[in-house]
Length: 409
Ligand code: NDP
Image (cartoon, rainbow, N blue to C red; front, side):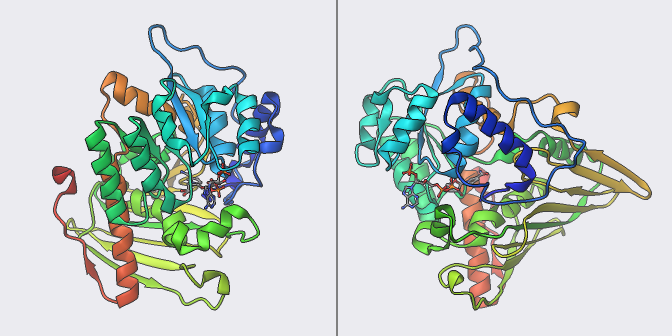
């Protein structure tokens, strides 16, 4: 999100409390970039992490260096280390040495583990850092991932993986050459509500899925530095689709468990000079071999929404909010009966999705778990996003019947 700040308002308050406890309250950046629905009043906030969890015996901490200390890194990822079981914050990479020192002192990162973008490659000599987590503007992801692999580190990279298919391939090739893991920051694999929805669907409880609809919108603030690069094509690679619509593209594929064979799209004209380089509103339809359709839209000028509608043969379902930081909600409706699954705290024991995501990479490496968010997965989304842009530009459907990318990977 610029993701989803409103429905995580209580959570950001909690985070703020945690940061205050850690002495870095002044570092909480802005109000969250994107706002969505406020959680229902009856939901209590998640408990604040009071202390760092002890590592399970015999496991060495897995050290991450965070690359780019912007909103998402400071407000969501850094505090999440407090609830990690295996992952530890080991280093920081920033273009702002003063900010980096402040964060380092708040989180107990030694000064020798602070890097700039210029001396980033020296990270190869630091055995405390196992992986880098790239949280930079989109167009910078690929170069930093390739540099990290050259330095012998694993990489976690934020969505969108990169701004072109060629850059995605470059990242995948560099990971293979270095024999290191590349993981994309798709939180849906670690959000307990999304996981329950997926289990319910895969168990056939909704019947065969026929139509998925998805809306991902938020009002972009151009006064905010984090909004400014999002409308510069050279840094973002695209507008609302790259930033927010990607949740819909990835989510539709995840819910339907199928890749589309054809894409049609339309982009709205905007007279707003802010959207001179990138799109504001764009709408797309995916056609699937199974006969299903998915339809999505995204916008930078519509109030925050993050929603999936699922029409299936037996039941219909809704994820709303779908991609929030906390308190997502899954609802199924059959006739007059509505079943709601909403609160991870009370109904589903789970770590928060950020900590679970950070712990996943050491789990993949240490326990041989299959990676839930590979580079190939990230590249497929970028391929489809490029097909959406092509269809919107040519006003023609684009074939995406590329065969099974999973087998080629
Ligand atoms: P911000 O603008 O808040 O932060 C980006 C940071 O990157 C800056 O603070 C700066 O850190 C660094 N940076 C380096 N070069 C530049 C540059 N040329 N222009 C601007 N910043 C630069 O962005 P976000 O934190 O919102 O987003 C960062 C990434 O995270 C994006 O790829 C975004 O898509 C993704 N994201 C993912 C979310 C999710 O839910 N998975 C949610 C939000 C974002 P410094 O000052 O330390 O150098």
